[in-house]
Length: 367
Image (cartoon, rainbow, N blue to C red; front, top):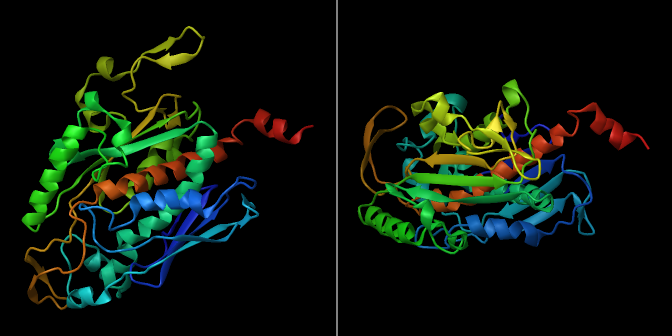
């Protein structure tokens, strides 16, 4: 199956299926010499793992990571870092009813059309279970970015029609509330909405927002490898994402140029800055030194307990009742997935940027 590798210098390849014995990732191109332990990665995986709150699937997975290669005596070796996560609580029998029909909102039909065969157990390769692999790899990238002073702050900005009030922003709530919302009032309203959807055997979507601070100006490439383009690809590759925004996103299309342009000025330290950040920290596909602002919009979880109209693989009409354990909303668990995909993208772009100027190459090799 093509399409399982992401990145240019820093390459990420994920493998495994939802109900297979294990899932995993190979991170190639990561520099040697950084201290790395399984505990560094586990912190991130624990933010994503299922069964941790009332708003997630009750599938019980420890998501315990095992580093198989690429680390020796506690430091990265420069060789591929291979990591594995065992699947411990998969109930394949829950999916026997859908083996010969297509679930609305899922990839069953499209996988059949592309491959003529599919793993119907939990969606196989198309399952969001695969995102645990991305988180493991992203945790490694995020650690190096942190050493360089780059801070990634991602959170739930909306669930359904409940949107955070940024004047009440409290970063301490992220990771300490089931919704991952940084607004205590909106978080409780969102919990009530999720419970309402659960009682109605329905689901709800939402939005993840992220702010990446500390990325220097000049990161990213023109034309096809623009930083905003690679960030958009990274986020659009996450399950259930239907739209991605950079900076003010679609709202920029509603303004005049005079209101949307970010004016430049020189501060008291002689540093060139912008008075506003409608562009979200990227101009011409290259970072401008401001906070990089991204947003990802998620559709409602397609697996719902209500009766749904569908057809069997031979076209026979069927009323489908989906059983199993599913998230009433995917957004809170997706926060760390988006964060890790952006960490991988930013680090990949920064590694590529090291060869952008001849002076950088000469400085490295001349003694």
